[in-house]
Length: 385
Image 1 (cartoon, rainbow, N blue to C red):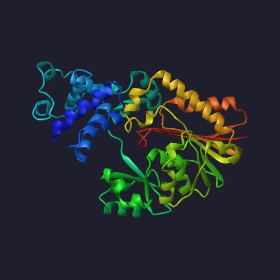
Image 2 (image 1 turned 45 degrees about the vertical axis):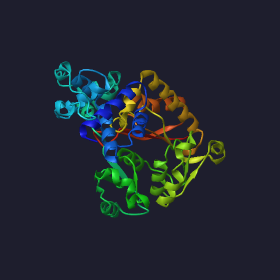
Image 3 (image 1 turned 135 degrees about the vertical axis):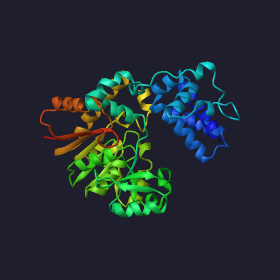
Image 4 (image 1 turned 90 degrees about the horizontal axis):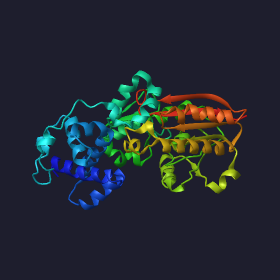
């Protein structure tokens, strides 16, 4: 595919997304009908779509509208390219610009347009004067970080082995287990270091949060385990016996082979076995949240989020904390985590729990933002009476 044809394909995917089809599904549907597209073509189309989702408001301003075509026209302008060289109508390129489109470029776009306006006060409450830098950062792709499994290798050994397979990665001093991938990100999962369990993808903010907690050596439950990344990190970091549970067990389908690859043990605990296995010395709750800290990584999420959805999430978070607290041993720890930047999901949620549970005491908390690490992330440690 030519570069212009890739733009044309992205227009079609964006139109499908605008009609209500999730971005990943729209990309999959396009790929099934585009047998001629190679892996580089598919990656380029995907990049176009997600670049638009990161800067949708700006693209609309620069493209003069909200259709897939207008958004891609805006992205071409935002990236400093000449639209007339892309919108040629030749082959599979988009049709030539109309007179109106050729003059559609408006004033310099404001990064505030690239997030839902109602979230701006909450973002500003988190970063204050750093808001312009945060919003500008949301326009760009997030870096890829790997966690080195220290039961398998040192950070230096992992970096050297990744380099053998064309993946350049450098240690990040902000976390003892972190490597930032600087080149060859799409080769990571084909690399021998990954196949042999030396590294796992895990964001820097998450690694810092996990390392900040004084985990006990007894029994730890990852109560909202999802794919199990934090459970694997805990099994590598501590001598504790680690258990993993999720309300949707299918999310943990790959946990057992990942644990075997890493040389650690994580015990899958279904819902029916929770009460019998309790109490635990620590229970980790990485709860469902707005995901506002990951908007560089999942920009579609910000356009799906609505005030009523945020309110519903807060009720879910509170319910999870209540249930998880019952599983904590006397004097044990309840560790609350989100990938949100919003205080209502973080500090306010912790305060709400403490007000409703006399005898529980806070033992510290921390918040990361894309300005201090990579993703936004929050953690708090609560001690049971």
